[in-house]
Image (tube, rainbow, N blue to C red; front, side):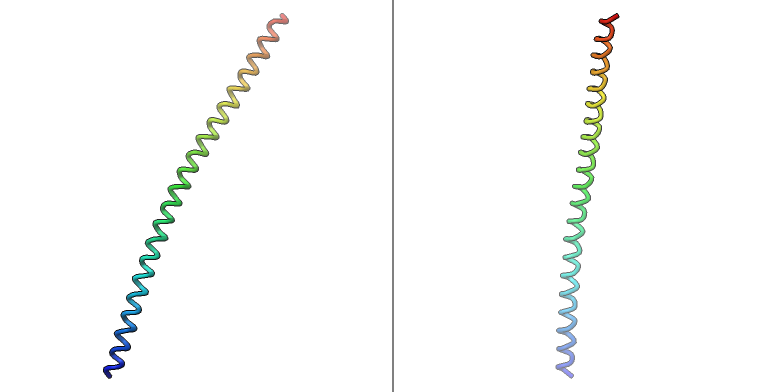
Length: 77
């Protein structure tokens, strides 16, 4: 009986150890996931800012071209 109790105790200790390792690994993965989500959010904000800046500069360039064209056309009148 003593040997079966020792075996059961060792098995229980091994189970607790594996359970602890699993929990630690899960916590590490959750932290990595959280960091990646933060990176995705930061990237999305930079992308949106870049797209807004690009569209504004495109509109400004188009507006300046129209003004130049209007000025040239008014010289002919």
